[in-house]
Image 1 (tube, one colour):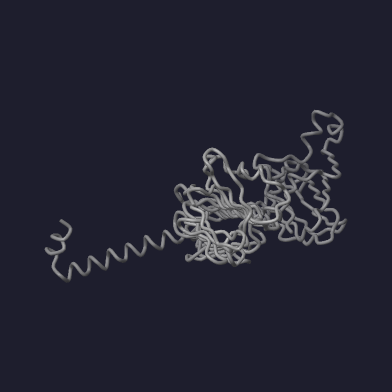
Image 2: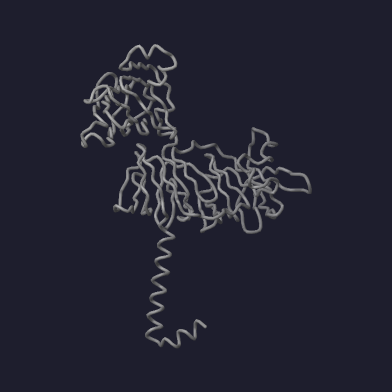
Length: 398
């Protein structure tokens, strides 16, 4: 029917139709390669748009307001909003730094491991792989932990191991793993190269030293891994310049892991609250209401006026950042931030004038080598009315 339709249109119209169909196809392909993402900044702002690229230092997003190039040092998470489907879970590759990747088929040729996944082939150096488990003994849903056969091996291994099924029993064979083909695992044993049929192999283990995980957590369709360096283009997601993952398989990136510490999870070293009616602070049931409180987000802090809170600066922190928003419908609050007793920020928020009635960013406050950070909230120019402020995602960043 489709051929008859083209014939009736005539050659010129058919050519035009082909061009239109090709154009639509290219648009669909472009949309596939440009996932919808949600970028959450450290200070709490959220940016939605199409992912353009990721480098070590920036995430580029095509948002409604235009293309934005965002510094990774102030990004908390990047999450893909598209439905990526279900991963293939016939085997799992476990890395030397805790990486766990599912796939349908795996090959090891020379120094390279190739893992078939939905969307394409993932490649990585064999030196980054600790073990491969074909999950013949457990279901994929139980594969978050190490395979059961690993627990039966001695802790002082002196070589690679291949686990071979013999009926209902498993036998560990000490050897040197050479490669993995479509049909066999080839090993060196007593000077000979021996192919072991893959359907007899439950798992393989390389004798390797563990690696320290990177500070960035990357979730992909079919696994999770840590990274120190990350790049994304429509061609591939590249981790640490040597692991290539199909670009369409990106699910999320957590830049904050190990790099950001929110005030909401830190103990307050010292706190003083003095309400306008000072005697109220002496009543236990009322005093609690005048102290900083963690809001439902788990990261924002509500601070009432005439309150001072002091936190220790986590070791290795580079900057402190936050945004300040009004927490009262009337009245203003004055916020003063100090580092080791030196004032570094002052602003009035939520007052009657439009200039100070909006959210204010504190910017990036340097805290390298600092010991303590204090936040003081007091009433604004309107006097003892309202004055509540919200510290939005106050965070120390390394």
